[in-house]
Length: 115
Length: 109
Image 1 (cartoon, chains in turn red, brown):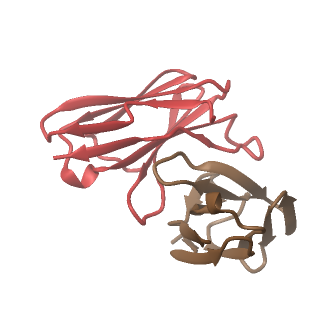
Image 2 (cartoon, chains in turn cyan, blue):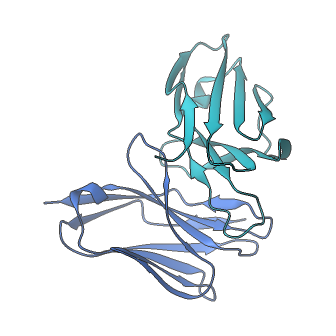
Image 3 (cartoon, one colour):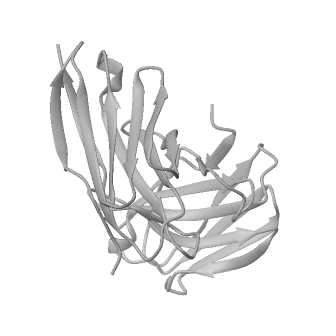
């Protein structure tokens, strides 16, 4: 029970589709994160939001578009994806960057397959 | 560049002890985390080290040596449910987490 939920858990989409991933945290945290996890590779940080403001964009292609309407919700909008974008997309939240230890708590992820 | 190294896979026997090593080269250091991730599930927080030494939490312990850029996770009295991947992550000088690729631990009866 992590307090971070993600929907959908599984998603299959074609390269021309548009879809959105949703993340919600019930922990009262102020920071939220999107990660990409590919098999046998380290977690790749994609975006960071702190108090609803985007503070990090790690050179992510524009076909991924994040949205953070409030500190509890985070979306990842997907359009014209490529097969190599197939991966597990994890959402995480933390109390506040810089506030030690600022442990990140993860949702269960969305398993995305791009055909 | 920044790098976290940990073994890809380890095998151990139920009831035994296993040590998973992690070495890191990062720009700055602001803490090291260990997470457990069962297949198809979320990574869950296990331990945090920011000072040198051993942190013990039940059957799990984590050790840090900042001068050597080295940490290990020690799991005692292994149970079948401990079969999972164990992720090492270091917070760098920009307060970003740098992740290892994870160690898949297989527990055999």
